Image (cartoon, rainbow, N blue to C red; front, side, top):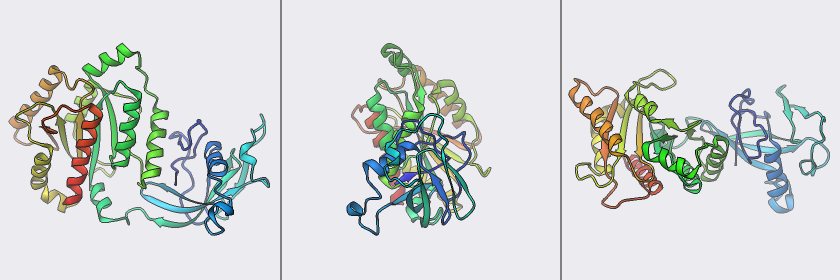
Length: 343
């Protein structure tokens, strides 16, 4: 499976996209989608996708491509006479190859290979009922910036596999001190996006979670929690901010909070209004006392107001044990998704 969004650039990753590039041609029969050099190398030289002895005459050269909730069957086409063209280094100053599809689309391709769309497998909006319910209620994972690179990669991969729609890292009090001590203060967006793309390709999901370009500041997070948000069509969105807190006797278990939320918003679900469940997980060391007090003050202001508006804040518990940050994140995401699927 290959994820295709905008026209890709060769950045050393197997499948990456450049949001500043023009959009790729729309998926349609006989439409051409260019491959990066790294994509072509992986398909032709690693997977040997065009080798009929390995894949059979019927399946040789066939791959699945997906984006924005739809998936198509496509065929790998090598643009020059030599199937080993992607193995050779491109000479400096040599012009990229171009091809024209039957639809009149002029495609630039530095890799010497393109994908030709054959037929749709899944059309956007026509997948199963579980995915349609999940589109009405999105899941947003908000985590304090993690110190370890391996832990961060693991969270990005597993959150993608579990259907999270958006992933945001936040600079909190404890995460800022830990990253300063370790010297690891950078945020490699391209590298993190590559992990997300690879996980999406493997887990059969048809879209990518939205990944923050850089960690959000604490003040920006508070601002977002207090603003009224809307979806791209302009409709109001109800936001539930579930703040996971360890060792809290007064915080209900997350499943109890989700059930109460379901009962409160039953009419909203029937009207197909959009909802977002924001899962807030602290970094290593959890939330600081100052941050917890800020959340508490926001909840008190919400209760004293005449209406809760579109933002609902609540502390929730994940059990009696103290969990690692990445374990708590996956436990909370699993609870939200399983509860939603059971409705």
